[in-house]
Amino acid sequence: MPYLVGYDSLQNRYFIPYQYAGTGGFNQVRRQMRQMVREDRHDELIERVAQQLGETQRSPFDQLERVDLVKGKYHFEDYFLHNQKAPISEKLLSTRKITNP
Amino acid sequence: MNALTQRLHQFWYQPAPAERIAILRIATGGFALWYLLSRYEMLQKLSRSDITMFEPVGLAKILYEPIAPGVFTLLLLVTILFNVAYIAGWKFKWTGPVFALLLLFLLSYRNSWTMIYHNRIALVLHVFIIGVVASADAFSVDAWEKAKAGAKKATAHWRYGWPIRLICAGTVLTYFLSGIAKVLGELAWDWVSGEAMRSQVAIDALRKELLGGKAEPLFEWLYPHAELFLFFAIGTMIIELGAPFALAGRRVGMVWAVLTWLMHWGIFFIMGIRFRHHMSGILFLPFFEVEKLGSWLQRVKSRVSKAEKVTTKQNMKPAVVLFDGVCNFCDASVRFVLDRDSKEYFQFASLQSSVGRRLLQQYQAQQDLSTIILIENGRMYLRSTAVLRIARRLDGAWPLLYGLMVVPASVRDTVYRWIAQHRYQWFGQKTVCELPQPGIQQRFLN
Image (cartoon, each protein chain N blue to C red):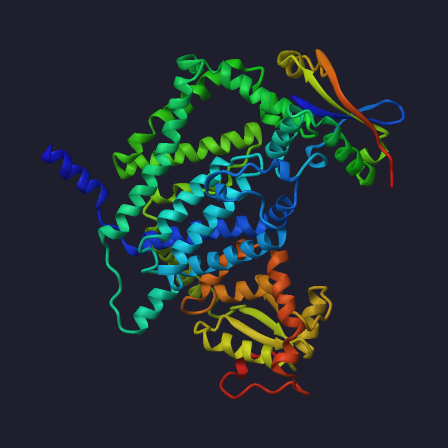
């Protein structure tokens, strides 16, 4: 599934909440993201998110320098039972620098 | 064959009291109103979002492109107005079906933006059935007007029974189809092993974490206990595939309704998904003789008030209403309450009086002439909350207004502030606080 990862100046990784990616509830925005990715509109989606993040004052998202749109694969048992939160693989779809207005 | 027809006839056309379907009208209408008001901003935002996401479904298919945001706001406001008329049962022959159509269109439009909310479908179905039948023959403005004109009170009749049966059948059918879909799916009966459910719940939890949320604490505890999902899966199948049995008898229906309601609370605690219509229990009300709840509550209330009368005769502490003493509108409101407070529950004091000021000081509140204040059971209530709590204690049908407490306080208070701001302009102002007339002086603390 596609999701968004932000990075601060120290290259710390943060998952970006769905509210920055679209309008509506959790599942609705998730579907909007999936549809945009399916239609190869990666740049449009990441541009919108980068713009929203540039305007936010919510910590820690106001400290982010870059946002990536990625698709990842996870192993449930490792993730939930062994606390191994890193993905098995992650494919970069698009990236944007975040600029504050 | 004859026996079967007779049995079906008995099933569909069982008489029910007018009050039962009227309560269902108020409950479903109340839920729809809460939904429209609480989602007011989100719905408007949605109507302004990316038009490439617009894929019309249902009644919205008549549209080639999204509605202009201004028109959508107007449509939303009109729907809210018809929603209020639906709850009140005012000119219901027209307002009922129109509201049902408006809600169907509005929610189809809402679902046209990348997501179909099946739980809203149940709400629309119920509103539609209730909206097109005689569900305003009790607890409504129409019924009140008919009674005023000398009409007899509606008695139990099959015309109030079959719509409730239809709602129950529709509800049961949705769960049954859900169960059938599982059995006909890729896993077929293997779904009952619980493994698919465990994976499904894990996918949902992972999605939440990747999109900036958090998995539910109960899920984190449950996930290592794979065997528990076997019981959950069996339970789900019993509820879904066993749903048609809920139509076999009232008691079976009630048990099924409670179990299904509990299942939705379980989904909430494990997955954090809120099926509000289901969790509130409103979806399942048609399975119960809801009109009896009122008389049960009345019995409890009369028992409590009898006990109160005995214990508080001497040291009764009624609720105190503080009002702006120089405002004509507030003065008229106090008279309105006095005329409808046969139990003499309320006492009054103007905000400008020494008693009023002392009470404000005691409750550490500032003198704000723009709000009515209610002090009840040692607590202070302001603005619309005070008004609705006062209405709750009045004679006649006024306590029904207390149902408006479901509307968020911010929305209620906006309307209240608007009226308060214009009260001098509309109703005038006095230069001094008038003394109460003899006969009601003991009700004033000034």
